[in-house]
Structures are given as structure tokens and as C-alpha cells.
Image (cartoon, rainbow, N blue to C red; front, side, top):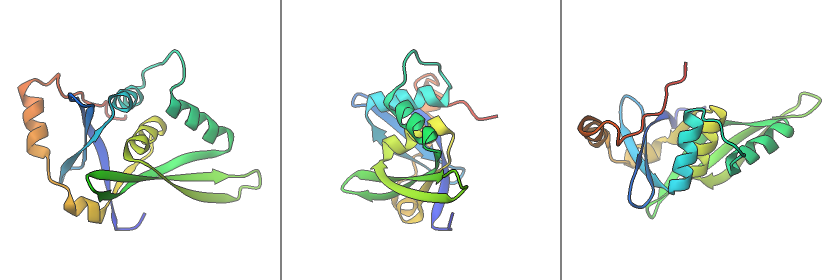
Amino acid sequence: MNKSAIPVQIRALIPTNAGTAVFLGNDEKIFTIYIDQAIGTAISLYLNSVEKERPLTHDLLASVLTSLGAKVERVVINDFRNGIYFGRLIITAENELQQRKIIEIDARSSDCMAMAALQKSPIYVNSLVWDEVEDMTPLLEKLQGDGGDEAEQPKEEP
């Protein structure tokens, strides 16, 4: 990973009237991406390792990747234009001869975050995007302090 990408984690998921606010960041800054409620729910299930009766769409994609000897190595939120965040899935695959291939696929940022949560893959933000996003740390702290249960906290990995 080069220096033009900043590692971040999902810090909180907060339901909104229009979907889910995903708070992403690190100790320096936190920013928000608004996503569809269904994908917000899926991310929450993956972060909290909740057993599901049947596979969700992201589970299906993960099963296909696994059967092909591939996995999501990392995801990158690589652009922000016209109020929309763009993402890339970085997938590694290895064939039966142990030849490694890296595949980069354009994807919605919400799907990138869901796949990262499911496969326990790291999330990065392009430094140009990072420099442009507004720091939402004070808002998240306020939301967590005012009700606590409004802001769903993903479990930390051991």
C-alpha cells in the first residue's frame, strides 16, 4: 500500500431517515458516508458476526471468490465527486500453480465496506479524498454521548 492511502475503520453505524450513516476514520479524523439502510444492516451483521439463516448478496460474492481461490485483500475509497463516494475492491487470487493475481474492481463504497466487514479486510481512503472530507468527530462524540444506543458500535476485533 502506498502513502497516498490512509487506513480507516468503521467507527459507528447510525440509522437515519434516509438510510445509514457510516462513520469511517482513525485517531486523526472521522468522516461520514451515507448508504442504503439494507447495506447498513448487512455491514452491522458482518461486523458483529451475526449468524444469518440464508446468505446475503455479499455472502454470495464472498463464496464465489473463495471457490475461485480469491479474497478481498483490501478496499479503497478512492474518489468523491458530485456528493458520491467511489470505491475499489482489491482482490487477490491464486491459481493451482500458486501464481498470484491482483484484480481491482470498481464498486460502490457501500459494497466495498460490506465486503471489507465480511472478509475482515482493511479499508483505506485515498489521501486526496481524506484531505477533502469534513471531520465529523465532534458530531459522532455528541451522538454517542447523548444517547449511546443511537450510535451502534461495531465490535472491535480481538
